Image 1 (cartoon, rainbow, N blue to C red):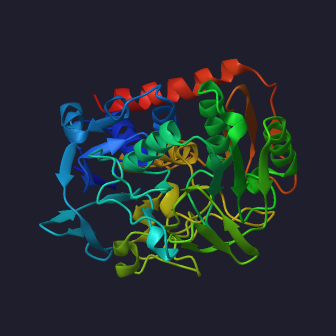
Image 2 (cartoon, helix red, strand yellow):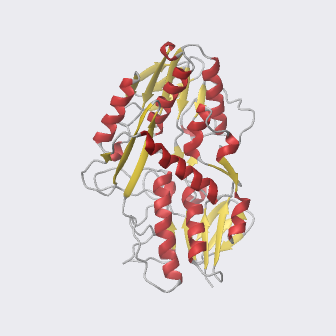
Image 3 (tube, rainbow, N blue to C red):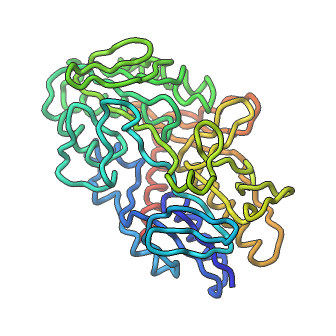
Amino acid sequence: MAVVVVVGAGTGGLTAAITLRKGLAREHEVAVVEREMVQGFYPSLLWVLEGRRTPKDITRSLDAVRRRGITLVHDTVQDVDMVRRLVKCEREQVPYDFLVLAPGADHAPERVPGLVDAPAHPMASGSARTPGPVFNLFSIEGILGLRGALETAERGDILVVAPAGPYKCPPVPVETAMILDRVLRRAGKRKRFSISVFSPETLPFEAAGTAVGRTAVQAMARREVSYHGDWHLESVDRDRRVAVFTEGRVAYDILVFIPPIRVPDFVKQAGLSSGKDEFVRVDPHYLSLSTVDNPRGGEDRVFAIGDVTNIPMPRGGSIPKSGAVAHLQSLVVAGNIAALVRGKAPRRRFSGLAMCVVEMGDLPPVTIVGNFFSQSRDFRVLPRLRAFITVKQLVERNWLRERQ
């Protein structure tokens, strides 16, 4: 009997666990270790901002995964012993034969002085008394607080700010600005607000190439949303309502931020971090901590997917941290582990192919497709069809179904 342990029940982790459970005989055990019993679908937070979803619509308890024959370990990982093949948690130790690391990345707004502290659980909705007018886009309370601020404000300057360093889902700043535009237009007060995006990227979503970025900036300009590239946030002066960048100071009435991220503490404790950013380096196609042809002690049985990884691209930079990438990687890893358990050679590879639908408010979405491992080619911008929004709805529906 083989025991496969998945650390993390986010988009990639739970998909890997469910796929493994379907692909392995019942004599083998599939276990998920997760510290948060309530999971939320982050891409739908902007629909909560618009009122198209409620927090209840996009959150689910993990209790349901037990009905799929998956062992659920509700605990916090503190270390990984690859020699003894143990996941060490606060309350117990979980042995494994194969390990999938999919813990995601932790939000770290504290890295920028003046930003709102992260809630204990970003997907917990309480009073929504997020201290304004600074709002965290990646928490339910931040989104509900922002929605309340938009309802009461009559005019002002809105800043959407991306942090220096890695953050989740690079298209989010653009999507947010354009949905803010739509919310204010429908409220009949758009002309009394300015909306500006400040980002360390020269053009939006640089990993997808210049054609994508230029298309997004042109669409933003049609709605009088300005984009400021190569701006690096240093701090926020909340008393004076000023965002302090390396390039200058910008006043705001409402500031919306994407939080910086960092690796979970156990990743560093286990010695899995590498490089300046401390994220996990893996074989880019096989997604193991060791290469297929050069396995190292214990690492050939450990795989990592999603936001916790750092996978360099041939043309520079790293593959973006997104749910779509994590999902595709989970299928590769699950297929290969299932083959190894059955004594067969692993043949699946992460190709680098990806598709992304970027919402643009009242305008048709910018839908792109391409390969992150391509040497030079830009992602292709598909025809601007509103029907592509259906793709996002189907992904959301599948995510919710997995947790029912």
